[in-house]
Length: 120
Image (cartoon, rainbow, N blue to C red; front, top):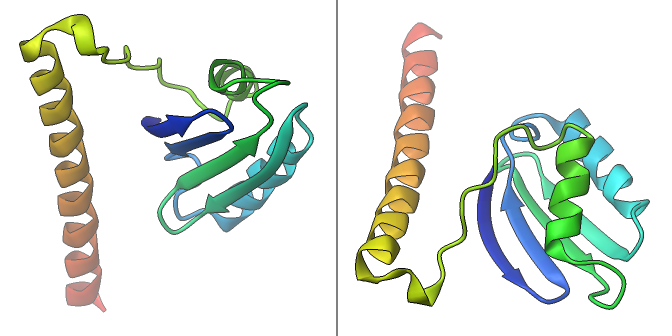
């Protein structure tokens, strides 16, 4: 799981469990719709992006992520959030990790597409 962005009432994640899996994406969307406080959910099987709109007076992002982990939608441990008081180096490392992870995903995807194109 990659934590992308959160504001009260809105949470965006990227999940490998639904990427390129339309069936899993549909199941996750239905499952999220049954949770208390969730108003709507958008799950994109092409990118693995999950956008959850929820009522902040009923639930919060930590609870939603915990429920997703318990149900098996999120397997990896959550990365520690970066807070502004963690120091200059901590923020830099977190941003570098995020950029490198995104770059690695793109490289692997393009390599697989190139390999598939060469085979077929």
